[in-house]
Length: 214
Image (cartoon, rainbow, N blue to C red):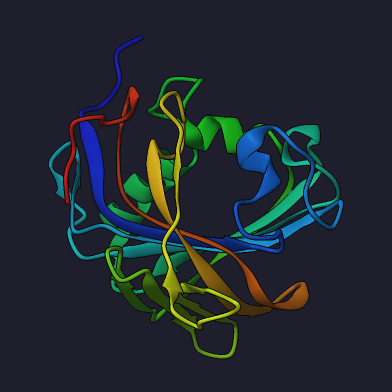
């Protein structure tokens, strides 16, 4: 199948209700037996055909009643309100997996979703320093995510850890952090001191763009 020429590149952050490391990354079950979380991606460089996507932010909150691969998920996307009509259409096609191989990130996660709510178009605040393991994603009245380094429980100093997944479909290597986050939307939840990940994400029709650098 021939796909539209597209790519999105930029820092991505995520957090969920699991302990640091997230058992899902190791084919384990969620810490609490279910998964609640969110993610956000700033597209520093991107296009879909001739439609430029540079500077836009996209995100989502989600919940699964059990392990992600068991399905039954609920999701609601967040689209940068600065996106024009053509950009919105392009983002829908990308994030919906319409222009990506079935074994790639958007299609894999999409296959686990049972209920997809209409997206929210909103002004967003996004910050990310992958090296420092700090990040922020805010949508006023709806989402508040703050990431800081994991701290050594004895010395209080930052503790650095990474997850490396040579065959990962969402990332190949990500920095770990500690997240406090809340979602106030069709579902409400809040968590403190939970799993967070930060990485430079680059995706195209065939999935991860392996040679991409920030």
